[in-house]
Length: 179
Picture 1: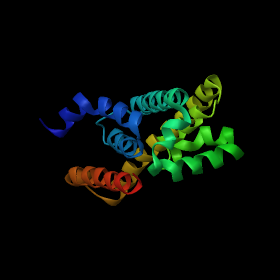
Picture 2: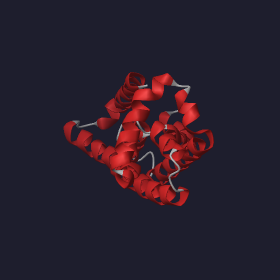
Picture 3: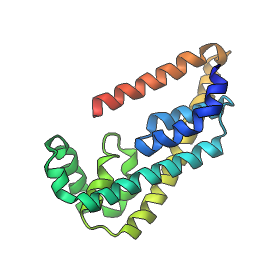
Picture 4: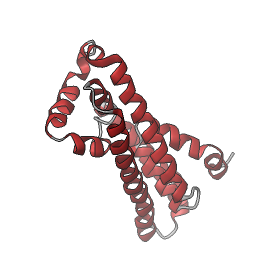
């Protein structure tokens, strides 16, 4: 199976799952692939929005259900949870709108917010707004990255697999460092 068939078969599923779990790297990569004609940018943005919104809403409700006791039993999360709580105490609306832009805090932030008794309706509305902004900005950024690559490389097809591998490895390294 060649790369094009693989992406057409599984690319959108991988994008949804990746953005449900974390997302930055896979969304940049999907935006780049949209630029190369393997995916459609409007579907990339829509699925990234839905994946991010779904994952963060689920984690918010887990925070409401499990609460602070769950966090207390995970001391390796203490620093990040405390950082999120300090920001939430000062800037509630901005934290909910922007947390997915801060690498390493995306997964714990909705849990912490949920554990504080934050309104589910308010969280959903702010989270949906933040997810939409994030999907457009990061997805389009990946698309524009593809345009920049075209400017620097006369024949991007020769380097396509290498670039995909480099972006994927870079994302894995960042995830490993911040985990």
